[in-house]
Length: 111
Image 1: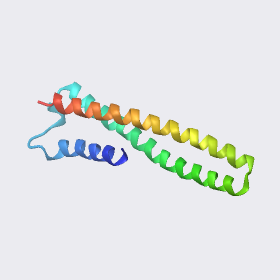
Image 2: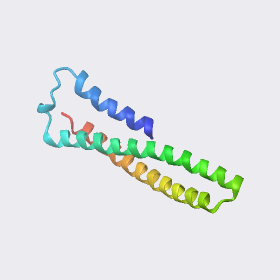
Image 3: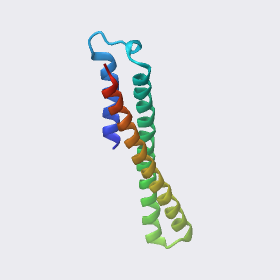
């Protein structure tokens, strides 16, 4: 999802730069808002994806340390990070879906 979100953000930039005689001010206000909303929501999806990657790695290190030592602190750290990781993945999926829908709506609303 991270790579596709980055690709869509690049596509928004490409639409604004490469189209012949294209000016953002000539688009309807709704289309501009759709593209800006898609850009912002996909930025949130990218941030959640990167945070998920960090917490998943950190959770795995706590889990491996717990398997070696059987320490209660490492188990609670593992469980907490696993829950944070699952929430980040859920937010990432929702934001990604909304961002893609906004981008597609903006493409269809273009004149």
